Length: 226
Image (cartoon, rainbow, N blue to C red; front, side, top):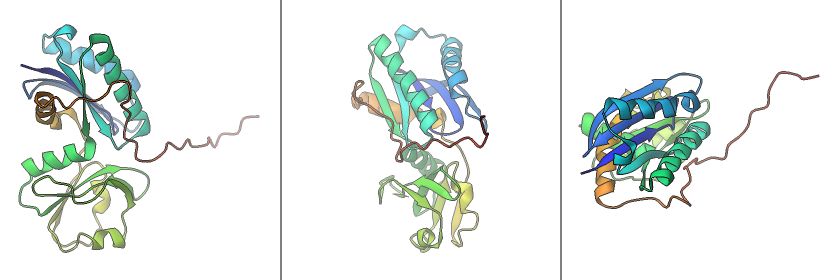
């Protein structure tokens, strides 16, 4: 029997849930243009534990989305997950965000030859990886600009674009495509986290780091300070 706290913070969606034996009991999430993870994540964790009528000491593990995605969101979510695991001496489970989106899409949107999850990056750039109908990746995780060269790789397939970056594919020119613009969240994590728990697929708490994919770039303020 397992009780797993779920945290997904790789996008603008701050999402926290609690799952028992692979079934999501409660979820609390909020998506805003301005990231609210620092203010809301711990409140959401307290909320789902209270609504599920569970004690922190009953937790079997914490599962967190490892990225790629937002530098700030990932840092906050994974720091919180590691802190809970350290304090309770329980294991940490991590799920690749793109794999999570792909597996959810394959289950809910059947009939496609390729599944292309996308996490929004800058301008016309996304973090992406392509999966076949069995959920196996056929390329590496990468940051790409959505241009004709990228679309040419997919134009012979029936492809589903899924994720909060999928909307950028509206003018892809691919005839046989569908777009599901959705943000990653803990509703996609419960079953995968249970599988990893049963298989003892745990992370090294001391060494585990977010999968940023790209280095953080701090933007300079346009406001002049005299």
